[in-house]
Length: 415
Image (cartoon, rainbow, N blue to C red; front, side, top):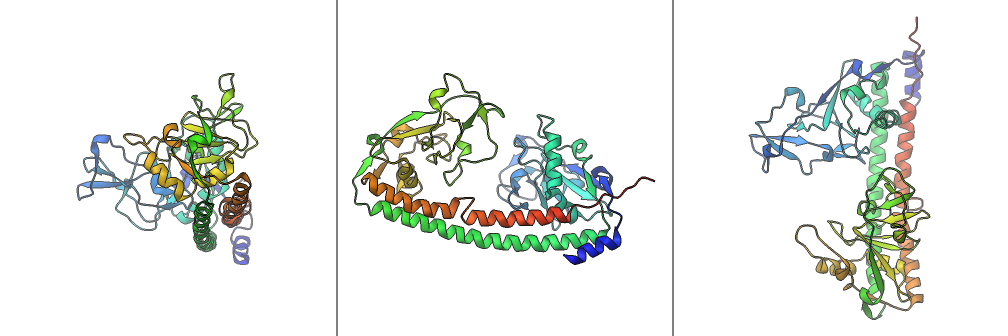
């Protein structure tokens, strides 16, 4: 990157001015409408409305899944239609994680955006793509965390964002930084896609061997009713503080691991003590779209599980980890999908769970199967050793160079 440093030394040797967002950008909030104005089908009398879910957080790109459509009786200003070089940003959400996520609009599109969204438009001293990269940097994240933590309302309004300070180097410097970061980002994205393809192949390989090993045991299949006891979780209100982690359905990811974001807590009481999890415990989602999703609790923390989860307590004939691997196979899901009750929210409660059948070889054979499948699982899902770790490392490398390029010596503007 010598060229960029030569440019900086040549064009702004004394540093770069940092200016208020409000001095160089315009911030426009989206449209408001009510439920009665929503329509099912798109036609010439409807507006297409992008919302927070239409920005993919992991890639900061637009997606057009589940686009909301509203009747043209809803008032939409010209400034509320998306234009080339706009930065679309999530300005309001029930989750602080989504506040500030952005997507860059590369061309004029026939879409507007909802009231919990906003667009940022730059004046002629600031390249909008440069600002897009700067908003993705740690500087903006730190600003949001500091500012929004002082309020209980997750709202990135004009008053909040107007005081954010932005470096404004000469346009030639901005555009060279954009060129470097776009190219680097493209390389990281390409590599990420290649690794994700590899990861998908490994997952299929895991599923194949897992199913094969369970089928090849030649062991008797026994219903879970004969192999375990079951206990529903604890009812309480999740909080942002407390002495005990409160594990809910939403805290279990698709791979059957505990998420480490949006953590909630409760204060331990005499009543909740009997719901404390032990290392090696299994808990399962019993309701909703993710019924049957199962967590192997392998954490050294004090935690209590919530009421929409079931704790599975195997007897001496069944290893917890063996059962957890079984829940990741089609053999398990074929049964779960058959036993689940529908009507409103899907329910996979204890009576259904008791009917699940699993091959039960001797404990030593179970240990052998667990040992093999753990190795496959580590390759697929372990964030410190497997393919996900490589993906994470590449992303962090890009973020490091991005933040380095976007950090400037502050120009002394005092006379």
